[in-house]
Length: 74
Image (cartoon, rainbow, N blue to C red; front, side, top):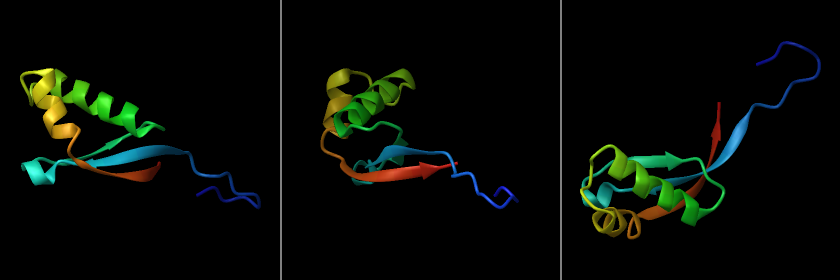
C-alpha cells in the first residue's frame, strides 16, 4: 500500500487458471488475455520443462482441462 492521500492502483493482469488436477497435475495461472493464447502458452511450457514428450500429448492434457478467467495482482 502507498501511504499517501491518493492511492496508486495495484498493478494487475488478466490471466487464466488452467486446472490439470483431473490428470493428476497442478493448476497453472497463465498471464494471457485470450483463453486460446493461454492454452497454447501452457502447451509450450509443458514441452519446455519436459512434462510431456510431444505436442499431441500436451494438447490432450491442456485442451481438455478446465479453465477459469482469473486476475493476478502483485
